Image 1 (cartoon, rainbow, N blue to C red):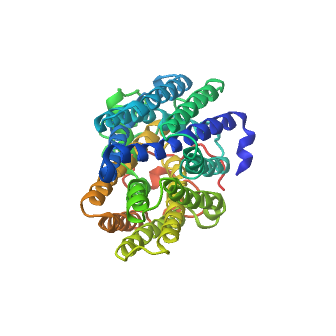
Image 2 (image 1 turned 90 degrees about the horizontal axis):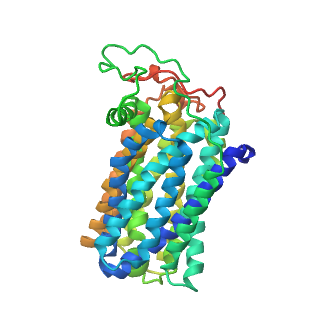
Image 3 (image 1 turned 30 degrees about the horizontal axis):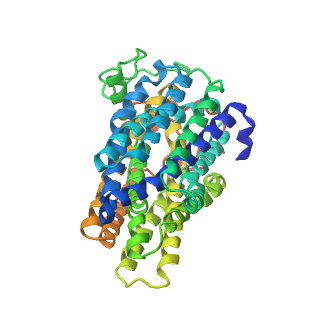
Length: 448
Protein backbone atom coordinates (compact mmCIF):
# COMPACT_ATOMS: atom_id res chain seq x y z
CA UNK A 1 0.00 0.00 0.00
CA UNK A 2 2.76 2.44 0.93
CA UNK A 3 4.56 1.72 -2.35
CA UNK A 4 2.26 4.17 -4.14
CA UNK A 5 3.98 6.99 -2.26
CA UNK A 6 7.00 6.43 -4.50
CA UNK A 7 5.05 8.29 -7.16
CA UNK A 8 6.12 11.92 -6.52
CA UNK A 9 2.90 13.44 -7.86
CA UNK A 10 0.67 11.24 -5.77
CA UNK A 11 2.92 11.74 -2.73
CA UNK A 12 2.40 15.51 -2.87
CA UNK A 13 -1.33 15.14 -3.41
CA UNK A 14 -1.58 12.72 -0.50
CA UNK A 15 0.30 15.12 1.77
CA UNK A 16 -2.05 17.91 0.70
CA UNK A 17 -5.00 15.70 1.56
CA UNK A 18 -3.56 14.84 4.98
CA UNK A 19 -2.93 18.41 6.09
CA UNK A 20 -6.31 19.64 4.81
CA UNK A 21 -8.19 16.84 6.54
CA UNK A 22 -6.29 17.31 9.79
CA UNK A 23 -7.50 20.90 9.82
CA UNK A 24 -11.02 19.79 8.90
CA UNK A 25 -11.02 17.45 11.88
CA UNK A 26 -10.21 20.35 14.18
CA UNK A 27 -13.13 22.27 12.69
CA UNK A 28 -15.50 19.32 13.32
CA UNK A 29 -14.75 19.41 17.04
CA UNK A 30 -14.83 23.21 17.19
CA UNK A 31 -18.13 23.38 15.33
CA UNK A 32 -19.74 20.94 17.79
CA UNK A 33 -18.60 23.05 20.74
CA UNK A 34 -19.65 26.28 18.99
CA UNK A 35 -23.13 24.83 18.45
CA UNK A 36 -23.26 23.84 22.13
CA UNK A 37 -22.31 27.39 23.19
CA UNK A 38 -24.89 28.99 20.91
CA UNK A 39 -27.79 26.60 21.51
CA UNK A 40 -27.13 24.60 24.68
CA UNK A 41 -29.47 21.60 24.87
CA UNK A 42 -30.55 22.25 21.24
CA UNK A 43 -26.98 21.80 20.01
CA UNK A 44 -27.83 18.53 18.22
CA UNK A 45 -30.57 20.26 16.21
CA UNK A 46 -28.26 23.17 15.31
CA UNK A 47 -25.42 20.85 14.37
CA UNK A 48 -27.75 18.63 12.37
CA UNK A 49 -29.05 21.64 10.43
CA UNK A 50 -25.52 22.96 9.81
CA UNK A 51 -24.46 19.58 8.46
CA UNK A 52 -27.61 19.44 6.34
CA UNK A 53 -26.62 22.79 4.80
CA UNK A 54 -23.24 21.25 4.06
CA UNK A 55 -24.86 18.28 2.34
CA UNK A 56 -27.21 20.52 0.35
CA UNK A 57 -24.22 22.38 -1.09
CA UNK A 58 -22.65 19.06 -2.05
CA UNK A 59 -25.81 17.70 -3.64
CA UNK A 60 -26.59 20.77 -5.74
CA UNK A 61 -23.11 21.96 -6.73
CA UNK A 62 -20.99 18.82 -7.10
CA UNK A 63 -22.57 17.56 -10.38
CA UNK A 64 -22.26 21.00 -11.97
CA UNK A 65 -18.63 21.29 -10.93
CA UNK A 66 -17.92 17.78 -12.19
CA UNK A 67 -19.33 18.72 -15.58
CA UNK A 68 -17.07 21.79 -15.67
CA UNK A 69 -13.93 20.10 -14.28
CA UNK A 70 -12.42 19.38 -17.68
CA UNK A 71 -12.96 23.00 -18.78
CA UNK A 72 -10.90 24.57 -15.96
CA UNK A 73 -7.20 23.96 -15.27
CA UNK A 74 -7.32 21.30 -12.55
CA UNK A 75 -4.51 22.71 -10.43
CA UNK A 76 -5.91 26.26 -10.48
CA UNK A 77 -9.32 24.96 -9.42
CA UNK A 78 -7.92 22.97 -6.48
CA UNK A 79 -5.73 25.82 -5.21
CA UNK A 80 -8.50 28.41 -5.47
CA UNK A 81 -10.93 26.23 -3.53
CA UNK A 82 -8.40 25.56 -0.78
CA UNK A 83 -7.80 29.28 -0.30
CA UNK A 84 -11.53 30.01 -0.34
CA UNK A 85 -12.09 27.42 2.39
CA UNK A 86 -9.33 28.92 4.52
CA UNK A 87 -10.90 32.39 4.29
CA UNK A 88 -14.35 31.16 5.33
CA UNK A 89 -13.07 29.11 8.28
CA UNK A 90 -11.27 32.14 9.70
CA UNK A 91 -14.64 33.91 10.00
CA UNK A 92 -16.34 31.17 12.04
CA UNK A 93 -14.93 32.14 15.48
CA UNK A 94 -16.56 35.56 15.20
CA UNK A 95 -20.18 34.44 14.77
CA UNK A 96 -22.69 35.05 17.55
CA UNK A 97 -25.91 33.93 15.83
CA UNK A 98 -26.96 30.50 14.65
CA UNK A 99 -27.95 31.74 11.18
CA UNK A 100 -24.40 33.07 10.66
CA UNK A 101 -23.08 29.55 11.20
CA UNK A 102 -25.40 28.28 8.48
CA UNK A 103 -24.28 30.94 5.96
CA UNK A 104 -20.58 30.30 6.52
CA UNK A 105 -21.05 26.52 6.37
CA UNK A 106 -22.81 26.96 3.02
CA UNK A 107 -19.88 28.97 1.62
CA UNK A 108 -17.32 26.56 3.03
CA UNK A 109 -18.98 23.48 1.61
CA UNK A 110 -19.61 25.11 -1.76
CA UNK A 111 -15.83 25.31 -2.10
CA UNK A 112 -15.46 21.72 -0.90
CA UNK A 113 -18.05 20.58 -3.44
CA UNK A 114 -15.78 21.97 -6.14
CA UNK A 115 -12.55 20.64 -4.63
CA UNK A 116 -13.27 17.06 -3.60
CA UNK A 117 -14.65 15.44 -6.82
CA UNK A 118 -11.94 17.13 -8.90
CA UNK A 119 -9.32 15.80 -6.50
CA UNK A 120 -10.83 12.29 -6.57
CA UNK A 121 -10.93 12.21 -10.37
CA UNK A 122 -7.26 13.20 -10.55
CA UNK A 123 -5.97 10.17 -8.61
CA UNK A 124 -6.91 7.47 -11.20
CA UNK A 125 -5.05 9.50 -13.84
CA UNK A 126 -1.97 9.74 -11.62
CA UNK A 127 -2.14 6.01 -10.74
CA UNK A 128 -3.51 4.06 -13.74
CA UNK A 129 -2.50 0.65 -12.33
CA UNK A 130 -5.39 -1.04 -10.49
CA UNK A 131 -3.23 -2.34 -7.63
CA UNK A 132 -1.69 1.09 -7.08
CA UNK A 133 -5.10 2.72 -7.18
CA UNK A 134 -6.46 0.29 -4.59
CA UNK A 135 -3.54 1.15 -2.31
CA UNK A 136 -4.23 4.83 -2.87
CA UNK A 137 -7.88 4.36 -1.89
CA UNK A 138 -6.82 2.76 1.39
CA UNK A 139 -4.36 5.57 2.03
CA UNK A 140 -7.09 8.09 1.24
CA UNK A 141 -9.34 6.37 3.77
CA UNK A 142 -6.53 6.64 6.32
CA UNK A 143 -6.25 10.34 5.53
CA UNK A 144 -9.97 10.79 6.10
CA UNK A 145 -9.60 8.95 9.38
CA UNK A 146 -7.26 11.69 10.56
CA UNK A 147 -10.39 13.84 10.67
CA UNK A 148 -11.93 11.36 13.10
CA UNK A 149 -8.87 10.16 15.02
CA UNK A 150 -5.68 12.22 14.97
CA UNK A 151 -7.48 15.56 14.70
CA UNK A 152 -9.78 14.95 17.68
CA UNK A 153 -6.81 13.79 19.77
CA UNK A 154 -4.95 16.94 18.74
CA UNK A 155 -8.07 18.97 19.49
CA UNK A 156 -8.34 17.43 22.95
CA UNK A 157 -4.74 18.41 23.66
CA UNK A 158 -5.22 21.94 22.34
CA UNK A 159 -8.40 22.44 24.34
CA UNK A 160 -6.39 22.08 27.54
CA UNK A 161 -4.40 25.23 26.72
CA UNK A 162 -6.46 27.36 24.27
CA UNK A 163 -10.17 28.15 23.69
CA UNK A 164 -11.89 26.07 21.05
CA UNK A 165 -12.09 29.10 18.70
CA UNK A 166 -8.38 28.66 18.02
CA UNK A 167 -9.11 25.29 16.42
CA UNK A 168 -10.54 27.15 13.43
CA UNK A 169 -7.13 28.78 12.89
CA UNK A 170 -5.63 25.29 12.66
CA UNK A 171 -8.20 24.40 10.03
CA UNK A 172 -7.29 27.45 7.93
CA UNK A 173 -3.59 26.58 8.21
CA UNK A 174 -4.33 23.11 6.88
CA UNK A 175 -6.14 24.49 3.83
CA UNK A 176 -3.32 26.94 3.08
CA UNK A 177 -0.72 24.17 3.35
CA UNK A 178 -2.79 22.01 1.01
CA UNK A 179 -2.99 24.85 -1.53
CA UNK A 180 0.81 25.28 -1.46
CA UNK A 181 1.40 21.56 -2.01
CA UNK A 182 -1.03 21.37 -4.93
CA UNK A 183 0.39 24.58 -6.43
CA UNK A 184 3.88 23.03 -6.57
CA UNK A 185 2.65 19.76 -8.14
CA UNK A 186 2.42 19.08 -11.86
CA UNK A 187 -0.88 17.35 -12.57
CA UNK A 188 -1.59 15.24 -15.66
CA UNK A 189 -3.81 16.73 -18.31
CA UNK A 190 -7.19 15.00 -18.52
CA UNK A 191 -7.38 12.65 -21.49
CA UNK A 192 -10.38 13.83 -23.48
CA UNK A 193 -11.27 10.38 -24.82
CA UNK A 194 -8.85 7.60 -23.81
CA UNK A 195 -11.41 4.86 -24.44
CA UNK A 196 -13.22 4.48 -27.75
CA UNK A 197 -16.81 5.57 -27.35
CA UNK A 198 -19.21 2.86 -28.50
CA UNK A 199 -22.22 3.53 -30.65
CA UNK A 200 -25.08 3.98 -28.19
CA UNK A 201 -28.02 1.65 -28.45
CA UNK A 202 -31.13 3.46 -29.70
CA UNK A 203 -33.17 2.61 -26.59
CA UNK A 204 -30.44 3.28 -24.06
CA UNK A 205 -29.11 6.60 -25.24
CA UNK A 206 -31.87 8.43 -27.08
CA UNK A 207 -30.34 11.85 -26.55
CA UNK A 208 -26.85 10.93 -27.60
CA UNK A 209 -25.13 11.01 -24.22
CA UNK A 210 -22.41 8.78 -25.61
CA UNK A 211 -21.59 11.23 -28.38
CA UNK A 212 -18.25 12.91 -28.39
CA UNK A 213 -19.73 16.41 -28.44
CA UNK A 214 -19.04 18.13 -25.14
CA UNK A 215 -22.32 18.92 -23.37
CA UNK A 216 -23.13 22.08 -21.50
CA UNK A 217 -22.73 22.29 -17.73
CA UNK A 218 -26.30 21.33 -16.90
CA UNK A 219 -26.44 18.54 -19.48
CA UNK A 220 -23.07 17.29 -18.28
CA UNK A 221 -24.28 17.23 -14.70
CA UNK A 222 -27.39 15.26 -15.66
CA UNK A 223 -25.25 12.89 -17.72
CA UNK A 224 -23.01 12.18 -14.72
CA UNK A 225 -26.02 11.36 -12.54
CA UNK A 226 -27.40 9.08 -15.24
CA UNK A 227 -24.05 7.29 -15.39
CA UNK A 228 -24.36 6.45 -11.71
CA UNK A 229 -28.03 5.49 -11.77
CA UNK A 230 -27.67 3.33 -14.89
CA UNK A 231 -25.39 0.60 -13.52
CA UNK A 232 -26.65 -1.93 -10.92
CA UNK A 233 -23.33 -1.83 -9.06
CA UNK A 234 -23.49 1.94 -8.73
CA UNK A 235 -27.11 1.86 -7.61
CA UNK A 236 -26.07 -0.65 -4.96
CA UNK A 237 -23.24 1.70 -4.02
CA UNK A 238 -25.81 4.42 -3.40
CA UNK A 239 -27.78 2.11 -1.10
CA UNK A 240 -24.56 1.35 0.77
CA UNK A 241 -23.97 5.09 1.11
CA UNK A 242 -27.39 5.39 2.76
CA UNK A 243 -26.44 2.76 5.34
CA UNK A 244 -23.17 4.54 6.13
CA UNK A 245 -24.89 7.93 6.30
CA UNK A 246 -27.52 6.66 8.75
CA UNK A 247 -24.95 5.23 11.16
CA UNK A 248 -22.49 8.08 10.64
CA UNK A 249 -25.13 10.72 11.36
CA UNK A 250 -25.73 9.20 14.79
CA UNK A 251 -22.00 9.42 15.50
CA UNK A 252 -21.37 12.92 14.18
CA UNK A 253 -24.59 14.60 15.34
CA UNK A 254 -25.44 12.87 18.59
CA UNK A 255 -22.00 12.32 20.13
CA UNK A 256 -21.83 15.73 21.77
CA UNK A 257 -25.21 15.18 23.46
CA UNK A 258 -24.41 11.59 24.44
CA UNK A 259 -21.11 12.60 26.01
CA UNK A 260 -22.06 15.91 27.63
CA UNK A 261 -25.69 15.35 28.69
CA UNK A 262 -26.47 11.62 28.73
CA UNK A 263 -23.18 10.55 30.29
CA UNK A 264 -22.31 13.89 31.95
CA UNK A 265 -18.70 13.81 30.81
CA UNK A 266 -16.41 16.82 30.14
CA UNK A 267 -15.96 18.54 26.75
CA UNK A 268 -12.56 16.90 26.29
CA UNK A 269 -14.24 13.49 25.97
CA UNK A 270 -16.15 14.56 22.84
CA UNK A 271 -13.04 14.31 20.62
CA UNK A 272 -12.08 11.05 22.35
CA UNK A 273 -15.41 9.50 21.37
CA UNK A 274 -15.02 10.71 17.80
CA UNK A 275 -11.48 9.37 17.91
CA UNK A 276 -12.77 5.86 18.65
CA UNK A 277 -14.88 6.09 15.48
CA UNK A 278 -11.79 7.11 13.53
CA UNK A 279 -9.67 4.35 15.07
CA UNK A 280 -12.08 1.70 13.81
CA UNK A 281 -12.11 3.24 10.37
CA UNK A 282 -8.32 3.37 10.23
CA UNK A 283 -7.93 -0.26 11.32
CA UNK A 284 -10.31 -1.39 8.58
CA UNK A 285 -8.53 0.68 5.94
CA UNK A 286 -5.22 -1.00 6.80
CA UNK A 287 -6.71 -4.47 6.37
CA UNK A 288 -8.80 -3.80 3.25
CA UNK A 289 -6.23 -4.27 0.44
CA UNK A 290 -5.72 -7.93 1.37
CA UNK A 291 -9.39 -8.49 2.19
CA UNK A 292 -10.44 -7.13 -1.21
CA UNK A 293 -7.89 -9.33 -2.95
CA UNK A 294 -9.32 -12.42 -1.29
CA UNK A 295 -13.04 -11.71 -1.10
CA UNK A 296 -13.81 -9.01 -3.67
CA UNK A 297 -15.67 -5.75 -3.45
CA UNK A 298 -19.24 -7.00 -3.11
CA UNK A 299 -18.60 -9.51 -0.35
CA UNK A 300 -16.64 -7.06 1.81
CA UNK A 301 -18.87 -4.04 1.31
CA UNK A 302 -22.26 -5.71 1.71
CA UNK A 303 -21.27 -7.73 4.78
CA UNK A 304 -19.79 -4.67 6.45
CA UNK A 305 -22.96 -2.72 5.71
CA UNK A 306 -25.02 -5.08 7.87
CA UNK A 307 -22.76 -4.36 10.85
CA UNK A 308 -23.86 -0.73 10.82
CA UNK A 309 -27.52 -1.19 11.83
CA UNK A 310 -26.37 -3.78 14.38
CA UNK A 311 -24.06 -1.32 16.14
CA UNK A 312 -26.55 1.57 16.11
CA UNK A 313 -29.35 -0.73 17.23
CA UNK A 314 -27.27 -1.83 20.22
CA UNK A 315 -26.78 1.84 21.08
CA UNK A 316 -30.55 2.36 21.08
CA UNK A 317 -31.00 -0.62 23.41
CA UNK A 318 -28.23 0.60 25.71
CA UNK A 319 -29.76 4.06 25.98
CA UNK A 320 -32.97 2.51 27.26
CA UNK A 321 -31.03 1.43 30.36
CA UNK A 322 -29.82 3.75 33.15
CA UNK A 323 -26.24 5.00 32.55
CA UNK A 324 -23.59 3.12 34.50
CA UNK A 325 -19.85 2.66 34.66
CA UNK A 326 -20.12 0.49 31.56
CA UNK A 327 -21.72 3.23 29.45
CA UNK A 328 -18.59 5.15 28.44
CA UNK A 329 -16.53 2.06 27.38
CA UNK A 330 -19.61 0.68 25.59
CA UNK A 331 -20.03 3.90 23.60
CA UNK A 332 -16.35 3.82 22.58
CA UNK A 333 -16.65 0.17 21.51
CA UNK A 334 -19.77 0.82 19.41
CA UNK A 335 -18.14 3.83 17.72
CA UNK A 336 -15.08 1.67 17.01
CA UNK A 337 -17.21 -0.98 15.26
CA UNK A 338 -19.24 1.64 13.40
CA UNK A 339 -16.08 3.32 12.12
CA UNK A 340 -14.60 0.01 10.94
CA UNK A 341 -17.77 -1.06 9.12
CA UNK A 342 -18.21 2.36 7.50
CA UNK A 343 -14.63 2.31 6.25
CA UNK A 344 -15.06 -1.18 4.78
CA UNK A 345 -18.07 0.10 2.83
CA UNK A 346 -16.69 3.44 1.67
CA UNK A 347 -13.06 2.69 0.86
CA UNK A 348 -13.60 0.37 -2.16
CA UNK A 349 -16.20 2.74 -3.64
CA UNK A 350 -13.66 4.36 -5.96
CA UNK A 351 -12.81 0.95 -7.44
CA UNK A 352 -16.46 0.32 -8.18
CA UNK A 353 -16.88 3.71 -9.88
CA UNK A 354 -13.64 3.37 -11.83
CA UNK A 355 -14.62 -0.06 -13.13
CA UNK A 356 -18.06 1.10 -14.23
CA UNK A 357 -17.35 4.09 -16.49
CA UNK A 358 -14.88 5.18 -19.14
CA UNK A 359 -11.83 7.18 -18.12
CA UNK A 360 -13.07 10.35 -19.76
CA UNK A 361 -16.27 10.11 -17.69
CA UNK A 362 -14.48 9.83 -14.35
CA UNK A 363 -14.85 13.51 -13.28
CA UNK A 364 -18.59 13.48 -14.01
CA UNK A 365 -19.09 10.06 -12.41
CA UNK A 366 -17.14 10.91 -9.27
CA UNK A 367 -18.96 14.24 -8.95
CA UNK A 368 -22.37 12.60 -9.43
CA UNK A 369 -21.59 9.85 -6.94
CA UNK A 370 -20.27 12.48 -4.52
CA UNK A 371 -23.52 14.42 -4.88
CA UNK A 372 -25.87 11.44 -4.60
CA UNK A 373 -24.02 9.94 -1.63
CA UNK A 374 -24.21 13.24 0.18
CA UNK A 375 -27.92 13.39 -0.54
CA UNK A 376 -28.10 10.45 1.85
CA UNK A 377 -26.32 12.53 4.50
CA UNK A 378 -28.68 15.41 3.71
CA UNK A 379 -31.48 13.11 4.81
CA UNK A 380 -29.85 11.55 7.86
CA UNK A 381 -28.11 14.57 9.43
CA UNK A 382 -31.25 16.63 10.13
CA UNK A 383 -33.18 13.46 10.98
CA UNK A 384 -30.62 12.56 13.65
CA UNK A 385 -30.57 16.10 15.05
CA UNK A 386 -34.35 16.53 15.08
CA UNK A 387 -35.02 13.17 16.70
CA UNK A 388 -32.31 13.67 19.32
CA UNK A 389 -33.70 17.10 20.22
CA UNK A 390 -37.39 16.10 20.32
CA UNK A 391 -37.54 12.39 21.20
CA UNK A 392 -34.10 11.77 22.66
CA UNK A 393 -30.91 10.02 21.53
CA UNK A 394 -32.44 6.53 21.95
CA UNK A 395 -35.20 7.27 19.43
CA UNK A 396 -32.68 8.86 17.08
CA UNK A 397 -30.49 5.73 17.18
CA UNK A 398 -33.45 3.37 16.73
CA UNK A 399 -34.86 5.14 13.66
CA UNK A 400 -31.48 5.52 11.98
CA UNK A 401 -30.64 1.87 12.68
CA UNK A 402 -33.76 0.99 10.67
CA UNK A 403 -32.62 3.29 7.83
CA UNK A 404 -29.18 1.68 7.83
CA UNK A 405 -30.75 -1.79 7.68
CA UNK A 406 -32.88 -0.73 4.70
CA UNK A 407 -29.77 0.54 2.89
CA UNK A 408 -27.79 -2.64 3.53
CA UNK A 409 -30.68 -4.86 2.45
CA UNK A 410 -31.25 -2.81 -0.68
CA UNK A 411 -27.59 -3.02 -1.66
CA UNK A 412 -27.57 -6.80 -1.26
CA UNK A 413 -30.51 -7.05 -3.62
CA UNK A 414 -29.32 -4.51 -6.20
CA UNK A 415 -25.74 -5.78 -6.60
CA UNK A 416 -25.87 -9.01 -8.68
CA UNK A 417 -23.99 -11.89 -7.10
CA UNK A 418 -22.78 -13.00 -10.53
CA UNK A 419 -21.31 -9.55 -11.27
CA UNK A 420 -17.70 -10.09 -12.46
CA UNK A 421 -16.61 -7.23 -10.21
CA UNK A 422 -17.78 -9.22 -7.20
CA UNK A 423 -14.90 -11.64 -7.67
CA UNK A 424 -11.39 -10.47 -7.01
CA UNK A 425 -12.04 -6.79 -7.52
CA UNK A 426 -11.50 -6.90 -11.28
CA UNK A 427 -13.43 -4.08 -12.93
CA UNK A 428 -16.25 -5.30 -15.09
CA UNK A 429 -17.10 -3.53 -18.33
CA UNK A 430 -20.17 -1.45 -17.74
CA UNK A 431 -21.62 -2.78 -20.98
CA UNK A 432 -22.19 -6.11 -19.26
CA UNK A 433 -24.55 -4.54 -16.79
CA UNK A 434 -28.17 -4.58 -17.75
CA UNK A 435 -29.44 -1.10 -18.33
CA UNK A 436 -26.03 0.57 -18.37
CA UNK A 437 -25.55 3.47 -20.73
CA UNK A 438 -21.79 3.28 -20.79
CA UNK A 439 -19.40 0.55 -21.77
CA UNK A 440 -15.76 -0.28 -21.51
CA UNK A 441 -13.68 -0.54 -18.37
CA UNK A 442 -11.20 2.03 -17.20
CA UNK A 443 -7.69 1.76 -18.56
CA UNK A 444 -6.37 -0.29 -15.68
CA UNK A 445 -4.23 -3.13 -16.94
CA UNK A 446 -3.93 -5.14 -13.76
CA UNK A 447 -6.02 -6.12 -10.79
CA UNK A 448 -5.00 -6.77 -7.21
